[in-house]
Image (cartoon, rainbow, N blue to C red):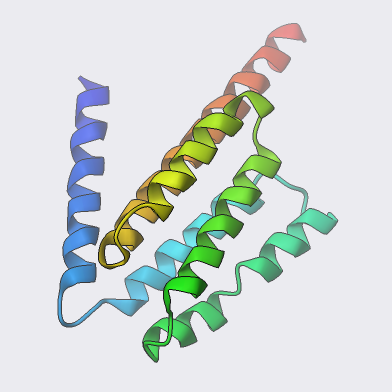
Length: 147
């Protein structure tokens, strides 16, 4: 039952995101928040003092992203670079056995028509990050069971 509720919630969220992107008045604040959430989900897996933490922070420049989308100069090539960058970071942090799944998710996004790419990107990136969360939780659980 819980899984069904979660799936229904996710579908409603992504449907809402797709509609929001298609509207004449795009909610840029929401898109920037979603972009920041991707960064936050990634950096939670690394120590703040680490080089990786700073690299992820620099790669996910939300102020620059916001400037591009608000001025409507965020083109296909910028979006493609952002997508590849995001999935590269996920693959950097995840277990190697998840690489194929993540590559397929990235290819699915890159094969999406440009006018629908944002919701698909957010969905696929979050699903890969959910797997990373699951793997990390399983690892921590197994580690605590060993104690």
